[in-house]
Image (cartoon, rainbow, N blue to C red; front, side, top):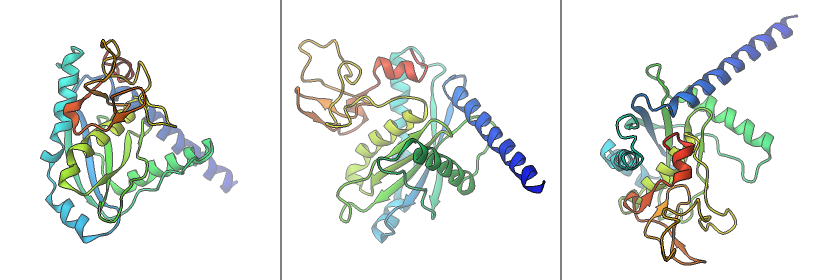
Length: 254
């Protein structure tokens, strides 16, 4: 009998979490008020180089993300009610669970639940409005040459982003952070997973350009600027990126 009661209450808790996640997912793209985006810093490789770098960071390092979102909202005539506010949540000592590589649907669901549980236990949610939490895992570029895949979860409004602890790469880091942030709002990838090439037309910032190539900008959810049929380059900063029409639709801008 006790086991049945325990399972019943567990199901009630899970139902409450599911309802809360659904409500926050809907409200996050209503754009009725400024959406808080809380950034947490994590030393992913434990190196002193990363420790020093994290101590040097301020909220100003991430303000270009705010500017990008405001400018793009203006292009879609949503400037009066579509804004975000970046806040720093501090440095965390704990590492979030790593997403499974080529995992099954069940493995991904389990990881998603673990990630949301970890976030709940390692952060504090202030206020009743929905807020996005982005966890930045920093690596020393002298030790790590290739970063693992980053993820953004719409359920729970959580991002887990791998970035380099390098001032020279900070502007490119912001492109990656923005990409994963938009995933938390429901935006989908718009590149071919096998080639990393942007998919035409949804992965092109200006699919009606004549001639079509080379493009001047990257579509944020494609992540690269198409230069030719077989070549696309990583943008240097958010100044080289736009939000395409389909992505705007996905985040309720268009």
